[in-house]
Image (spheres, rainbow, N blue to C red):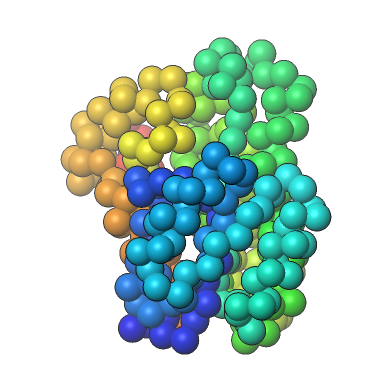
Length: 254
């Protein structure tokens, strides 16, 4: 029960196969009380069904592209949580057409959209969470190797993840004096609904199985357990870092 008495807010749960839900399960297993957000009516029912399987879980609507919805979500959260210990950011989006063509063809609007949802939202959420993290805290964001190396067809999402990782470092510096730690988890490709929108995703899984030191793909529960570690006191000296959970694929040169 490493997180007993702790409160965690998780953005990005889409369905039972999403990485965000695996993180939610890992945090709950160690004693954390959860709050889950959903974006729009399309996801509301599914998120609430998952929340119902974990007694005491709070659900909140929130579109991370709208500052008034972020403010409203945290206002509602204060009615259930008197403080916040962990914020988990599992939010990313890019236009389908910008993931199917070459990066050089990325539209201006598509670039702005990917950056707003996938990168800037972390800063907006951290700013809103800071006043509730009165006892210190841990902010965790999901990223991917496409932030630093070219992954064909990952395109504008890779650039957005690079901005996200830079944001993690700057936020870690800003929030460190308040004992709020900010870290990222760079997970290997996992067969989620969002990942299936990337052209050639099946091939990505095959390459990781072939080239990674562990000769297998990343399991979603491994990412959940890493997030649990980052949320707990066991990681109290770690901030501004990216932890790779990818069967070792990121260390390979060829």
